[in-house]
Image 1: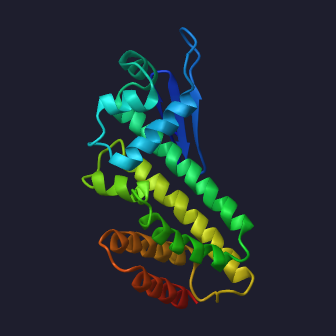
Image 2 (image 1 turned 135 degrees about the horizontal axis):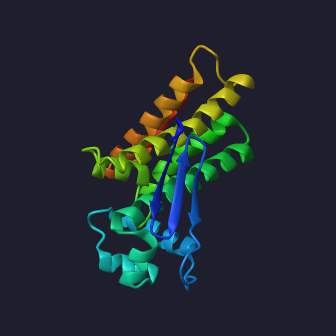
Length: 220
């Protein structure tokens, strides 16, 4: 196994993880599938994101994905393997979306403020789900040996986007260079986690907006 890279295989699916990306490849063997693995993973991801791992039953997964029990086991191995693949899909897609928003933002700090405000927007949804990474980290806080490396990879992936934003902010003069982008990215990650917790606890929106202003002031 090369450093920074590890692989695991589900029944019918191979997932390769490294510091830069995760790749899911169907294994072509046996009869061709009559379902779309990408859509199955999307549906499973949405379900796990909404309900968590323990609260999601096998029957819930069958209903959400449209798979039979035999197809689920044949293609993904078991519930946890499907969960790991769905979580990988989450942080792959969300980190890519963040990079795209950073490229389209008027300024790097505008992107940072938008990320903070997105926490409040999520909290106002009719059925707020929060951040799947935070949810998974809380649910698997005891350190499941299979899930923990994915949590670490997901955390690193999101922090790398923040680090890129702060590097750009320093390059264009929005921020001083007194703090390292790595430290600022960790600060941002912690600030967003704290905001999510306070938003869930029912803190008023105007109070959280004041916290966001304070975070932005401290960054400068």
